[in-house]
Each structure stands twice: as C-alpha cells, then as structure tokens.
View 1 (spheres, rainbow, N blue to C red):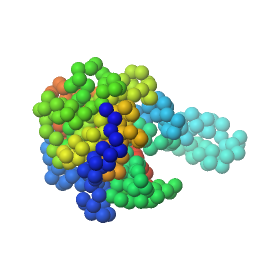
View 2 (spheres, one colour):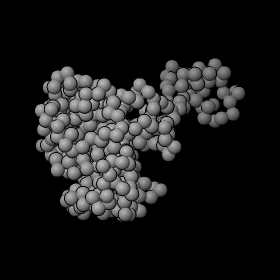
View 3 (cartoon, rainbow, N blue to C red):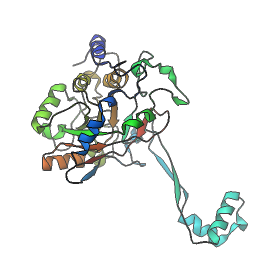
View 4 (cartoon, rainbow, N blue to C red):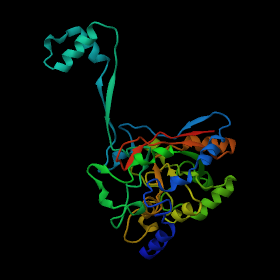
Length: 332
C-alpha cells in the first residue's frame, strides 16, 4: 500500500534524532554503540570463526546495470611482464624517463614488484551510505545544510566522521529467506514489514537491543551471483521499518540487496523515491549498508542456531565521501 506525504512527514517527525546527541553530532545512531556495547559484541566470539560478508569489487559487479555508476576498472601499472621486457631490451629504445629509470632499477638487483590502481564509484559493491548521501528540503542529518556537500566533498557528515566508532558492534542476522521458505531469493512485490521483522526475531529466538547492527538476508546477492543481473529488483524493507529501527535503537542496518529498502513505488510514498533512505539517513542519522554477501552467514546461523555475532565493518576512510567500500566480517 502506498503512503502519502502526510504519512511520511508524521513518521519523519517521530524518528528524527536532530539534536539528540548535540547540535554538532555527525555520527547519528552510531552513538548507541558504547564501549560496553563493543565489549558485549567481543564476548559473542566463542569459536573464532570468521565469515566474510563482502562481495567482490570487480568488472562483473552489480553496478554494470546502472548508468550513473560503473563497475570498478582495475589496471596494473607495474607487472612481471614490464620487468622482464625492460631488463631484456634496456632503456635504449625507451623515450619515457620513468620507463628508463625503472629499467635501470630492475637491471642490477633481484627485487621485483607489481603495482596497480583502481577507478570506481565508492558505492560500487559492498558499502556503507554516509549520512551525507541523501537529503531533502535542503537539509542533511541534524540540520546541516545540503550545500555543505560541494565538488570538494562533504564538509559535514562525510564517511570519515564515523571513524571513531569503528564500526563494530553486536550484529544480528534476520533471515527473511528462511522465514518465507523460499530457496534463495525474495521476489519483488512483497516488502518486508515491521510485523514480519518481529516474527523473524521470535522465530530465531533472538533479541534486538540498543546499539545492535541489524543485517537483513533477502537472498538478492546470492541471486545476483547466479544470474549476473545487477538490475533485478527484489524485496526489501518497507519504508515504515524506519520506525521499527528507531524504536529498537538500532545503530545501523545492512542488507544483501541494492537499496536495503523495497524499491517498488507501489509500496512507497506518493510523490517521492526511496522514502526509507530519507528517513534513515536524513532524519534518524542511521547508516545503510548495501550489497552485503549474507549467504554464507545465513547458512552458518541456520546450522548452529546462533544469529548474533561480533560484526566488524569499518568503511574506507575517504575524507568527504558520501559513501565508502567496506569488507565486513562476522566473528562467532
């Protein structure tokens, strides 16, 4: 069912955290991650088992389906072929000063190396949305002006501002795939509602506590790995789940799909796009993680019945960035 802007504004007023941690706060709901919370998360490690939740950053990534972002371009700048060629043929045929210098370097000692660069959108695969990523009515989270994000980057709410929070906390997996009884993939047209989240919590016999990072398994990434279709839609969180996250004092939320929330306009808010992004990032100050690979974690949790773990997921500290790559791990 589609909500109205009146519904949206009512929820926005209810969940808005502006000023809650001071007028200069730039980390939002990560404030719920206290030192005691970090210690609690560390205490969940019983087996020393490490499960990667990050996808590959490659030319075969999901962003190839979209025009405003592209997949990473990975280029070798120095490799073994360069070394052997330069040593064999020498600098006499080289006009480039750098190549000549490298030839001389390789010629008289056994040391060799490879080097490379990557060019990519910062949200090309597994990543966090910074709070400066989404705004409306010229305001970012906590009332910071939207025009404080310029071509030089985000002056307020850049991804680097969350560095002091890690990000590490107690993670809780909510397995929608298992709850719905589907094989791998939650088909579009059936958004995940707050009531369904409560059902999953009860089914898994797990509790959501203040400062937790909730991780939602929809099966989208597993589906993508088999089809390579990064543009395929799937179920996500209904926009009213913002209220659920607010009530439970969740520190952050991540999912294995491309938007976390459900992209179907028929389940959104009339006259706008991605209302949950606006409520979470702009009003609540709650970061969103997208494109996480949750299949292996879901399988492990199903096997041992333990859906809580230490989550370690610091973003790449790119100053002024509105999002950044992450290679999160769950430790059990």
